[in-house]
Length: 287
Image 1: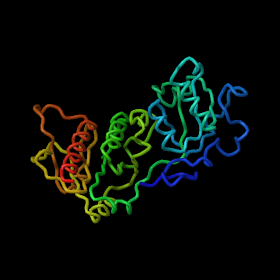
Image 2: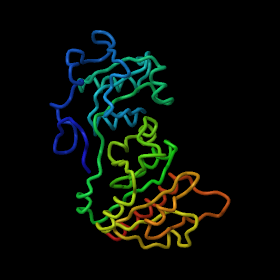
Image 3: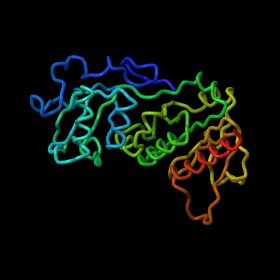
């Protein structure tokens, strides 16, 4: 997995001490909000390449794993133990800390928990590096629109060792602030790649030994009847439509998850978690 960023990094993938600090041109304004007064940056003065991350768990993980540029705290942050800890962590890292009205943070994410950070860069999928794995899991998400579903899937992917997630560029949710919050730090570890068409990447991955399995209620074979190969791509359909026909055609096999009622279906993130967990179980059992 590669990390896309304009900043220098240590060999372990973390941020080297020399790369820490405020964005270019803001050196004299480093420090916490109580050092020399609150810092102010126009909301439209944020580079488009920076990611917004909200949620205290996600922010803490980003401090460890990624190149954090600035921390925004809500007015009155001093009354919160969690926010005081984040401010202290940012100050020790010599990052810019800025106090914003709650309404500004509300526009970013309704459940921001009083803090937003901006991160430069994100994990990227190293297609050549996939050759180095004996066992591997990837995901192909076919038009998910609910950020909570995507966030939950990214979190599960982190915990089960998924090496990358492919999503469409259009008509699908991307890495929003809400997705980062729900992922609880997973977005700092799992590459989420946008693509205009699944066909090209899937063809490349099949040549690398991957098999594509699509979750579908139309399938006759159960997830628990499969002997899964060493390299697996799980294709997951949209919340209300399932897999599109072109995506189904890319699959080597369609697979169902047992359920007692035909009147409903599993939530996309729940179904993904079951498929990934069963794949991880089989891979570990064999090794």
